[in-house]
Each structure stands twice: as C-alpha cells, then as structure tokens.
Image (cartoon, rainbow, N blue to C red; front, side, top):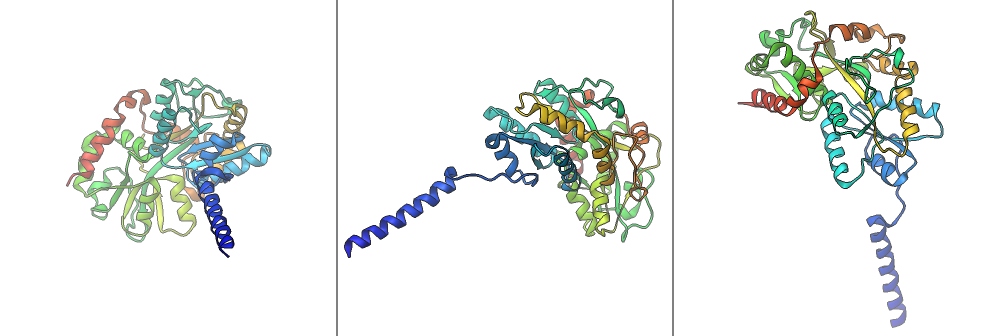
Length: 358
C-alpha cells in the first residue's frame, strides 16, 4: 500500500514538472502568421528563421489585405507582422538593438524622421524598387534607403451628429463654438502621423496656432485610432484624424466625416516609407515584399482601404473623398524633413506643454 502511494506521488510530481518546463519554454512554440498581435513576429524572427517579419504602424484594415495578397503571389514565403504605433515600434527596435538583433526584416510606418535617423545610424539596407519609375516620390534626397509606399493624408474628422457644417480653414477649430472643449489630437509621442501633423502645422502656422487650440479646449488623445473612436461615440466632437482609419470606421456605420481644409497648400500629407533592415537573413523575400507593396495590385488595395497611393494608375473610389496622388503631393504643406529631424523631441515636448497645460 505504501509503495503504491509513493508511486502515485512520483507520478504527480513528474506531471507538474512537465507543465512547468513547458511553460518556461521547454515545449514547442507556435507563431501565428499575419496575426498582427506581435507574438508571432517575435518568435518568427528569432526562432522560426523562415518567416518574413514586418513591423508596421498601419492598422489591420490596411496591412492585412496587403500581406494576404503578397502571400498569394509568393506561396513559399511565410509572413508575420506586428502592428503598433510608431513610437512603440521604435522603442521595441531600440531594445532589440541593445540585445544584439533586430527581429524584423521590414519596417513600414508614417514617421518620416525615424527613417532618416535609421539611415544615419546605418541600420537600413538600401534598395531601389524595381518599379521605382512608376511611383510618385515625395523625397527630394531619395537614394533608395527608404521609399514612400503611401501618401497618407489627415483632415478634421467631425461627428456628423454634433457638427453640421464642414470646416474649411484650420482656424475654424479655435474660432467656431462647436469645437470648444471637444477637439482631440493623438499623442505625437505615440503616433507617427500625429507627430508629423503637429510638425507640419507648426511649420506653417507657428506655435501660436497650438496656443489658440489650447484656449479653445483642445485635448491630447491616445493613439491615432483612439481619437477617431472617441469622436465616433461623441466623447469628442471632432479630431485630427488619418484618412484610411476614418474611412474604415465610416464603412462600418460610424457617423463621421473626413474634411480637408480648402486653404492653398494646407493639406496634411504624411508619406509612409517602407525600408529593409540591414543584415536581414531574408533579404530576397524583403525585396519581393517592397516590390509587391509598390505594385499596382497592392497600391489598389491601398486606395481601396481609403488612403492615397503612390501610383497614379490605380482607381480611387469617390466615396472616400480623397485627393488624387499628384494633388496630395502638390498641395501638401512643404517641409524639409532633415530640418525637423533634430527638433522631434522638442516638438513633442512643446506640444504637450501647450495642449496639456491646465
């Protein structure tokens, strides 16, 4: 009887030990392809070894279809991607560099200064896409280190239940009563598109513009998607918002409208560069992804998602109300990215001090 009891205890101990070892990494790990969760990206880049890993600030409504299209064109290439705000991705990349290895092969975000930083730090692999002559290029100093894959636009997103008249001037946001204490801007420390928008508006109108926004009760929101959600549910009456995120929510029934200012050369146009990390073990696959992203097929997906492509040979649905690619390039607020690059930290700090002060 005693012997049976000892054997039973040993069996329980061995079972518990198996569970503990499995939980600590002793068992096999599954990487979810294209989940966007980030879990697959880390294991795919570090352990899988055979997967193309993409870090991107694009939301699922945009990146998901493009990755699926790429996989159909390239059935032998597995893909994982992590979608997060540009600020979080750059912090992740910095931590990975400290540990000795960047786990991603490709990066696609909308914070242009980050790409100049990475270029200066020599962590990007120069690659001129095979279809470069078919693209619009917003960079005067283009050298193939990174290539615009989208001409993202931002406008004033209004809740149509609360605001009946479209804004037409940037001054409407601080002069019209319907925006009082109800206008939101995503935190530029978290959102690349928000940071770029703040930098563009500041370059054109000065910090006085943000002082007036503060006086009108403007608020700092969280991510670029969150301020649009807050506007949709009525917590905000309006916000500064990204085109395709807004259009995806409108398609699902949100009472929102994307409004562009009619002032000359006052469009918030933010290029979204794509680049390849130097030292990637999947260089050929990364080049194929960049080529596909810039192809007519993928750029049609960009346009269908409700944002502006970098090609003029794709169709844009009029329901999105977007400018044509050549008009977005022409009418965007002009800025020299190399000049705003050293000011990024100060710009975010100044914006936070002005809008966040009591």
